[in-house]
Image (tube, rainbow, N blue to C red):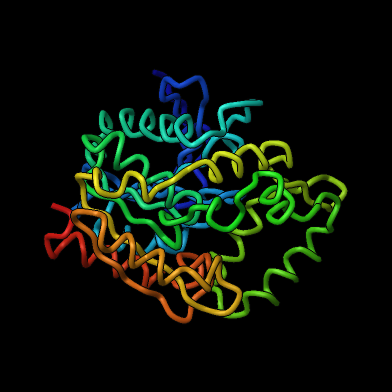
Length: 301
């Protein structure tokens, strides 16, 4: 397993490329020093078509609370490698497990791992398949997503959830849209959203995740059935769902979360209401404090 430090982003964070032994090198962004941390380590997994830097606001708060924090760009996303295959749930989960093994050797042993949306399903799968690598997981407005309940046929799902074509959008227009659509988000959230895109020399954007790979990730999520594994998860799972206008599957979310609450052996639910799907970007301080409190009160033991 190899790693290489490629950049120091700021006074607060460092970027490190990690080869976890699964055939793909992933970018990690790190805040705090595990040798100096007073609280448990945290690893953060983004959602579909997102990137590690959307966690920046929460990561800064976690670091101020004594945690050493690592956010990961999953395969095909951000500055990680972008192979043409391997976007099914098990392969992506294996990627995360590989990164966790490397991190364990660097002082981040048995972290709490948080994932948002698709990443929430990834960390629930991780808790099921690799419980020895984590002390618990946090599923942020995800972990309960079963797309087949809403779209029984893959073709229907691929059409309904196909992303818009943003290639060629001017950077200034995209940022203006983000600031208008998320007027209550802090700057870290807007900057993190803009990091979903490569900024080209002509002043336009190109998503880091291509449409073809986006649809492969979506297919993997559509195939995933977390309710089938809930009862067999042996580590603590905290669900942090968002409730608000335009939320993901808001009409059935309460029912889905209630099912998880009655199926996962050690479980806690912390609702954010009202909140956006990217609640960790919208409310980074509150989110970090909720998770931090759970690391202190014995939930993740």
